Length: 250
Length: 200
Image (cartoon, rainbow over all chains, first blue to last red; front, side, top):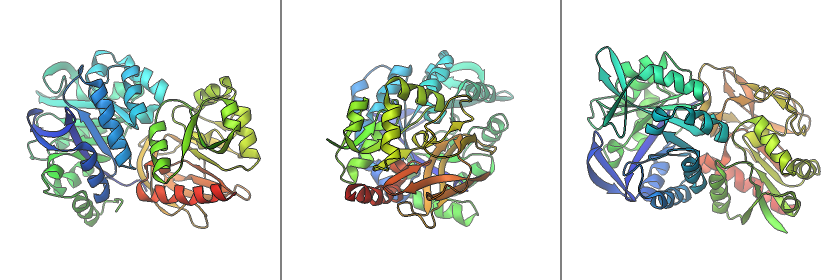
């Protein structure tokens, strides 16, 4: 049976892991490769590395960070942030990523998902979907949550699946960094529309939130600050999940 | 002579395969052409993407015959994910495309509600030499139904139904999962396989 995944997220700015609330007020949280290795030892199922600094600057810096993290771990690595096209995806894949996540560029140019699917396979293409609550549903946000698109979250997820995405990293913009729990309605809303695995993101404060997210239909959960701050280790979370009857890798 | 030749079958994931092999102390080179492949004592065939595209890409670069020869002579080899699938006869992913046919049977679409299968699944490797039971990382929509494969030893995983997780014989190992991404368990399997590959 496929286990439920727990994925620490490293938001990286200028080569350092940072943390903030709603993508703002970034504070230093450590070295990416050291943290990634530490989380692997704790039982992390995967590492997500999001380059929050820039869509345009520091490509070389990003490649170096990806290569260092790759050397430090023997679990899957997903890299996002500033992936504009097949060529920039190829750069991070050659540096050591196993999957790439795309957000803004996919909204602006949906065919990019099909191109990435054709070049690298669906298992390599993660759609990062940032959603904000609006009247009667959720709207897709881009540019690190600063720009509204008018797209409905579940509809965009469905379209991305048809175009060739292999996984959805679903972030609640309202909950991100707030520690008030995942947006469960958002998860079940998107779950009802797609067959793709869903990684829930935004709002985790502890294992109970993760367990709720799985019950709402998530296949994996992502969190950052609770791990960086040392509130819980990945193993703590997994033990709690196991006690509640979920299958995990320990 | 190349000690370990890792075949470039596309872009994705090659760096992870190289990182894992280096971590277990393996000196490896990326090979792109058939003349480099025939010089490789040990061949590693990674692979991501689609069955048809992979076969076409390898055929265009003249790699299919060299790979077929290497595998059929029983020389040390490791095939991963799509690299394993192309060893079979065909795949539902790319109807009409002929695989390498080194192993009998066809690759089918996995019968499960959530696809692709992405994550860690338990494999049962009872009776296998290189593979060990435990959780391994998978990323696939297609797989080979579990069955008998002559003198090959087979491990299995469950996802809706029972499928081949890995298949091994002599110094050859083919895995549907990614040993290079399966943490310590994967590194242990690679170490075990490499010890056999070195000794023959």
